[in-house]
Image (tube, rainbow, N blue to C red; front, top):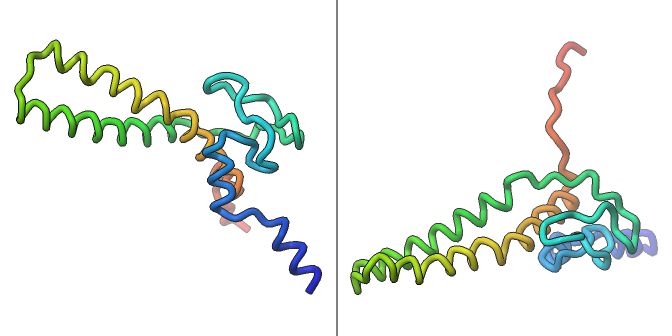
Length: 133
């Protein structure tokens, strides 16, 4: 019974991994910083020394953010255009800051969330199965 209690304490739940990701912390210990800059990853965790070389989030975070931001901004712009019909310069004044806010602000957290989920699920590049054996 003591063995099962100790293994369950060391296992990290999916929710805990996601919260570590959203906090931009190390996916293994949850205490070290993940980033050295705005989107530049640190080489390793300063707390548990996890090497961040395995991380490859690719374009995933940008795609999620573009889809969400596009739906929000286009929806709002269409409602304003149909209801008020403002001049084009007002559209630029309204929607350019919203585009910047909805794309840049969540990008860092989304990237670290995908990194934490990649670590949690032990994701790796796909490999072909050798069927000759």
